[in-house]
Length: 501
Image (cartoon, rainbow, N blue to C red):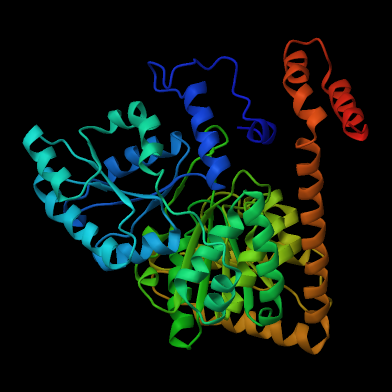
């Protein structure tokens, strides 16, 4: 959906009234039901996918994940070979509404029973369990008795069942409203409190946003000392693999690491597939690491609009290195530079014209470039790419007179170059602190944060204006039918906004 459609739940006029059409396309009825869920809960339904790992069909995983994303769900995919106790912890950390188990019917009865017990032990036995399995009626009865809420015999059954899915989530407890629960929990480093606070921050409910504002204000004095690193790069560069190696390196140096991994939301359904924990298997198991995947919610810049607040929460909870992974390189990706201390751009070698691989805007805000996958037969290509990028950086005026962004090489696979990158980050921090730039940079970030919140508040006030809400659908129809030009429509809407009721 577009931003306007998100505010008004205005569906495409071409969509059928039915819940789904013959080609699986979602209809108006489902969109209204989903919008009602979001309006009540403040966020999209979120599902964690898992299964008996040794028999797990990765291709089926992708198909099922896409079906749920098409329904508008945010989809977490669990790492392989994850113990059920860790799975329950993951449900907590992601604040998922439901678990989906995929695998051979013969293995699922025990798997579902184990997950049910683990959720009960974690005091999350309200979480429903769905199953996707090509099972007989007898096997389905057995799986249901083990604790599953429903069984899909094929992935094709998911979308037709969609409207009933939200009914399964009706009893999911809403976020606690006790201010002290969040403050005391976060400051004590309680993971449950931290993740629930992040969920509260991401909520669109007015009462949640009001509570979140007070919580952030109270946590702010306890934050600000962590090293904040933004990590971006072209698709396929190995950002998640790099972060896993980098995170383990930091753990060995006794740092506590928070990874805020951002994945793109669908512009059509609004759903997303959040697979970062799958690609950070070993890091996800570490007690001193918090990995929180979040959807972009179609926000410009590849970062959620609440990422700044989430950074504050993680810092107040004692995480002293914050890694913000963004969705990819592009002009809009510059937004992440306004909330971190160091912006690292990962690049590939031998992938075509290296200079065209990064935008001028990215070069201007990058504090360092690292050519990843510099291992095996690719080492020479990586060194050649390093030379090309180094030449390119000399053509850009650096933002700091005393810092020329270096070009490094690294390998997430062999761990080579990881220590050099960390040394570069620390050297940059040392220099900007000595020059008095660190405090100035944080102050500038605070002002940019305020401006972003102001933009958001003005946009929300515009779209919630009663006059706008009454006239928006008709004006959109006139623009679509060619009766009104877009510029005239925009002017008319702004005029409506300036009038008082």
